[in-house]
Amino acid sequence: MSSEEKVYDPESSPKHEFKDIAHDAYIVDASTTDPHMHRSLKGRHVSMIAIAGTIGTGLFLGSGKAIANGGPVGAVLGYLIVGCLVGFMMYSLGEMMVYDPSACGFIEFSARYVDPALGFAMGWQYWFQTAMTAAVEIVAASIVIEFWDANSKHLAIYVTVMLVGIIIINIAGVKYFGEFEFWFAFLKIITVLGLCIVCLVVDLGGAPDRDRRGFRYWRDSPFNNSFLNITPPSKARFLGFWNVFTQAAFSYGGMEGLASICLEAENPQKTMRTATRAIFYRIVLLYIVSLWLAGMCIAPDNPNLLRANAEDSGTAAESPFVIVITTAGIKVLDHIINAVVLTSAFSAGNEALYASSRALFMLAQEGKAPRFFAKVLRSGVPINALLFTALFGCLAYLNCGAAGAGVAFNWLANITTLGSMLTWCGVALSHIRFSRGMRAQGVSRDILPFRSFLLPWGSYVVLISFIIIIFFSGWTALKPWSPSDFFSVYVNIPFAFILFVGYKVIMKTKLVPLNEMDLSSHYVKNSVVRSKF
Image 1 (cartoon, helix red, strand yellow):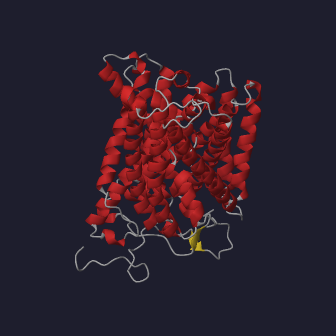
Image 2: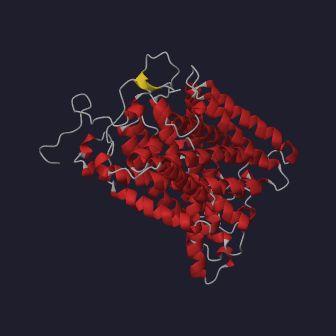
Image 3: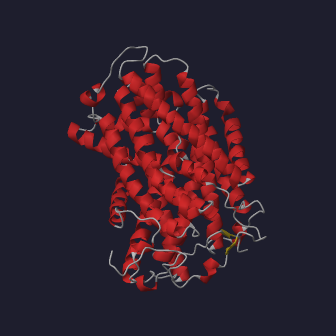
């Protein structure tokens, strides 16, 4: 840092001229009597949501598919690589949203720093992705209940109860939403830590079966030599390992939803900075360590694990953690873990509904969705956006159809997985343009309240890596050719492309010039966001 550059002080440093008057029109003092978003999410709420909020079936159930496909070592390496990429992406997002927490996260950043058409496409694509995620988690939760009740005629009842439950929690207001997510996130953290201890005890021979596993499975079958019966084994090992990336992306999906909380977080610059840093602990402890220990205790060719992977059923009885517990001869604990998996799926669905409703609200605020969706109750709930989005939760009833839960879950999961990676690419691109704009306008990075030594170069790594992973994510649908699987994997790409091109042609938008980019922070201390309509 040169001697002429100074650390940013929001009280004394001059602000850049605001270039987006329409945006500032709905940032008002908290004393306003107009319906507005309530900053009722405390620091503890935001931190716990950041650490464990969206953890659901991706870790507790889907990680078994990663072990079966990639082997214990391949699964850990795949989750570690994707985890690093997601961590870089969250630090990119963190730099922008801590600097300007009044914005609608990456939806507005992509429009302000890249192209308004990209903001439109990312906003609607993210809304679609999270609306589908809510349905995915409800489907998963209803599958979990089959552990106790195998009567498929009861599935519609369970889906209805859970769907109504997450709607009620969201309608109650953000204060109650935050408290609910805090305690369920706490439960998930305690459960993962407990599972790590259980797996360690089992691995060291302390379980009833007295079998000291050590690194047996890591030594004997670290990677999958027979993935999809592909030959030679070296090719099977690589493709099985590569397939872990998509599963890892599904498990990590939803982290970017932290940006939706900016509008309702108390003291957002402080709480969002803390929450972004907490992502590291989530990736390393809750994902990598738990998967590492589970892979030490279960053989990748375990019949229950292979059956779950082949059928794509995702039943809790075939969760890698439950398989470890039952194989080791531990009683009762599998029921407890199953109950936690159920609450985790419900919690993840609840947060997905929250994120998607806020995305639709801000799209309406920006004039990119019907203003009808910008209506806010006195309690701070964007009621029309919430109820409209909740309608898509009814897709969970696909679970009750003749095709079965596996097909419904697989379709919806594939849609949400690719949607997350597209969003991550958009975040990385927005941050690259943000950094280039700062250099072009001679703005020092010292003005940023939150900075990372990984950036901006980390954003280039994220963008290039996820483009490659997206391109090859549906290769298993090619041989043998499966049109339905191929469509479910790649449907998000033409959807986002049509949104981008359509808006660009109709609105005649252009790439935002670096020298004209709005780099000012629109955040005003103690301000809230009210509905423009």
